[in-house]
Amino acid sequence: MSAFLVEGGRRLDGSVRVHGAKNSVLPILAAAFLADGESVIHNCPRLSDVAASLEILRHLGCGVRWEGDTVSVDASAPAGVDVPDALMREMRSSVIFLGAILGRMGRAQLCAPGGCELGPRPIDLHLAAIRTLGGTVEEEGGRLSCSGALTGGDVVLSIPSVGATENAMLAAVAAAGTTTITNAAREPEIVDLQEFLRTLGAKVRGAGSSVITVEGGKPLHGGEFTVMGDRIVAATYLAAAACAGGQVKVTGVDWRHLSTVTAVLTEAGCAVRSGRDCLAIRCEEPLRGVRPVRTAPYPGFPTDAQAILMAAMSRSEGTTLFVENIFESRYRHVDELTRMGADIRVEGRVAVVCGVPRLHGAAVRADDLRGGAALTLAALGAEGRSTITGLQHIDRGYQNLEGDLRKLGAEIRREEL
Image 1 (cartoon, one colour):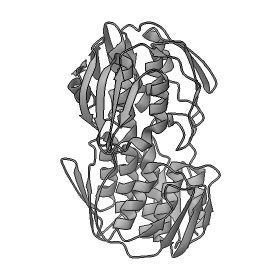
Image 2 (tube, helix red, strand yellow; image 1 turned 45 degrees about the horizontal axis):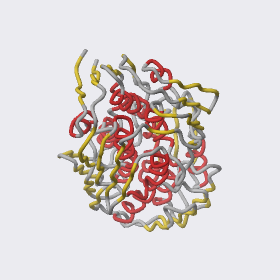
Image 3 (cartoon, rainbow, N blue to C red; image 1 turned 120 degrees about the horizontal axis):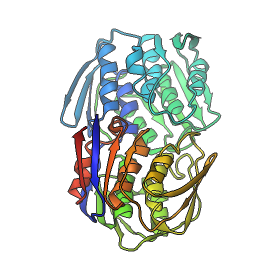
Image 4 (spheres, rainbow, N blue to C red; image 1 turned 180 degrees about the horizontal axis):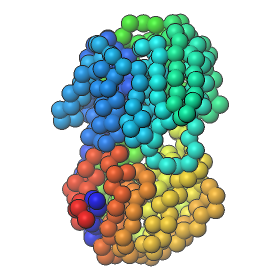
């Protein structure tokens, strides 16, 4: 079993570059299956979720190469329509292959996806979009069997689901005719997917707004693309400085994608500056409590940044209220933070964080991706040594988190227990 060993109390100082966005590269890899040719994808992070996606592509008959941060996917001769249960259960995002496989092959077979347990995340919206485009969906024993020649249609999402928007886009690209996706998610990663699809020859417009239009049925070819920087990884390093104190510069990210996070950090007393593709933060004084932080779809405060900000606000002056509006079970990190001395009370979707002067080191366990990052950050600002297990969750979304933190002056190492 791997664990992080962290000696807290070290001020952070320096610069770090974020890797490619996990939430962008996963749908892009699924989209590569639609192309009759080779797609070359740069700035692809070495994450366990990415490795699982590449195994799915190999199973589907694609040629795959992974060299450094560049992945090549040759989907010239696809040979499969199913995703094995073992691969589906490794990550929640595996359902994104549904629209691509059905669109390319005319049928698809998958089981219920896995990933972090953050409460119910039904794929009803994904399936409804497939049905709107003319696909048939049969569900039996936890498996999905989809088939049919897709045609354009009007997909109306009841909520702006990121995954359902992406699946609808992938299916619509292969559908004959024009598709309009209304109440679409507006996240920057949706825009990145649109730009990749355009690189392959697809006609897609509107990403970043609530209405996306896809002119489907066009032949797609291979292409070359560079994935955007990971805004949640950037937020993590900014929050690390807030936890431990110091000055940190984060490069390789569009500062506009983090405006709600930096606004909260500024209100808490940090000095934040933005540049062309970077952000810099300076934290010299104890943080102070801020107005309620309510997670919401983009451009609201991201649910993925809730836990890491809570770790910072645990050691502050005053009280901060968090309201989680996206997932029902996204406070699993709270019990572990309290083991480190945090004063946090949870009632339903609300968490009340009463700041304390100091946290202390403890043995804690990550139960999900962002919660694991939050525990790591809390350990940076705590007094004494912390041991963090459950690193398989952290490795789903962070490439060498401990190495980047060491560059900034943290005393952290990964060891086998």
